[in-house]
Length: 467
Ligand SMILES: CC(C)[C@H](C(=O)O)[C@@H](O)C(=O)O
Ligand code: SF4
Image 1 (tube, protein in one colour):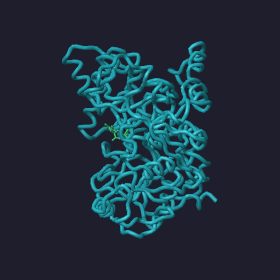
Image 2 (cartoon, helix red, strand yellow):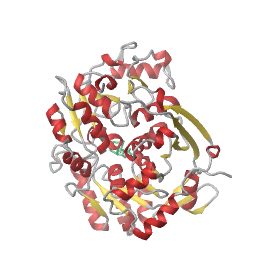
Image 3 (spheres, helix red, strand yellow):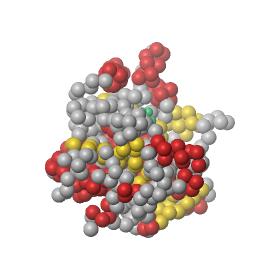
Image 4 (spheres, helix red, strand yellow):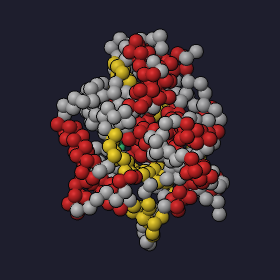
């Protein structure tokens, strides 16, 4: 029987099974300040220790102010940050604190440090843990009580084994399009519930052609299609990323040789092994822009705000409500919608490649009058790399704000927020009501498209700026 990559990784980590559940071993446990306080408190009350401190890594991301990290004014934020610091001290867990050189969004720093490896299980109290699947890891988000269970036992109870969904992406991504356009097009095609109960595996020539950064963007948003996780089989691109960078936790020497032999076996034997399967052709895609309040409410930038009677996966009422919240009129060309704020960052698109792509569009241009553009590196390493390449100067000369590392305007948990009615072009992954601040209106786009909106003041087909 042919097996999928997901099944292979799952099987390797089964500790025990009952009629309804499976206990999985966890190779890496990543932690941030939002979902860990009660978990540590639970350990404390039970008088337990962290079972595998060597497999547990923490960072600060959601609450971090990105203008000046050291100036945390919101009391709630300050408390969460200080609590994580105190918990890491008490339980002797490694914390990548602000200004350590390795702080950043948890899903950006895991791969950077070589913590994210093929064939491993990775969990974090955060839904976008699926990002790490780009390396052929089985990575998923867990709840706070599960965080406590993993801290105490290094294992996790799972219900029934998820089904597998193969998403083949054929063809070549046209110039000016980005991995973000692939994943938005996938969610647009299958809906926000399209992968519920499944682990997605992305494959095919358009996926193989992606860099690790691009693969992470795609896997990151698996969760927005309802999937439990998303992954991509490891190949030479994966191995280059792991072995060529300065990645302290990546295997070296003999351990690396053994790992490389093992990673070769980490692939789906045959697409017939998937429970379900779909295919999309990357060469037919145009840049994608969301118009509504979930990531499936997406159109081509060359298109128009849709008629609420003809919105796939949404009732007329839901589509009307979304249009109303977004302050949009059906039939308006997407390129006539002005933006107030541009946010380039997040665990979806806050990596070095994303900043390079954005910089190409900003180079020699200015942020349009009345628009504010925030460029927020996903980690301190990304920030340092971008500065060493002079990208920060390109952004500053264009009139954009160059910030410090954190989740920033992806969600309204730190000072970077939209005010009511403000409209953003955002490279993040969620656009529900209030996500970037109460009353804020979010349009999800790629970094190139976000930069194009910044310099023109409205959504613009970035392909015209790159000619
Ligand atoms: C705060 C955290 C629990 C949350 C998540 O799990 O995804 C956040 O990262 C998000 O993106 O909404
Ligand atoms: S960048 Fe956004 S999606 Fe990613 S972990 Fe932070 S808040 Fe969640």
